[in-house]
Image (cartoon, helix red, strand yellow):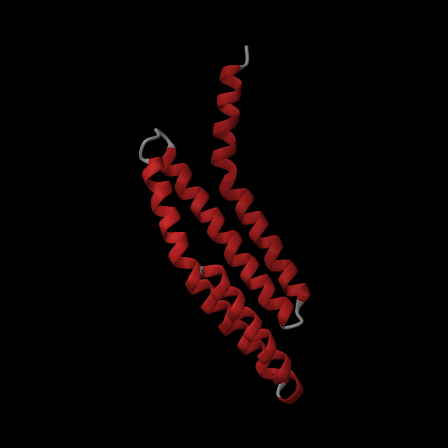
Length: 128
């Protein structure tokens, strides 16, 4: 299972970081970033299959394709934002991480406006 590989890599990285911090603490952030990239490479394979499945389903809907594109972009922004925030926190820069988090949330809200407006139009049409 993929999750066991991911957990194994993460635990190994944590042990290495603990050992490295005693002698060369500046290298700990590099190990953390490399570990994150390795874990993301495992996840991307699974994510591409999910995106293909959602794409097939959206082809069956009228407005599904444009909404799917927005949802995939929003999901990508959320993942990348969380990854960047985690790196900032690992480096001891929580303030910068908070700004990245806020920026990601604002971008997600701005991108979701077409979906929200479409839902509101549907609700208005249903109500008498």
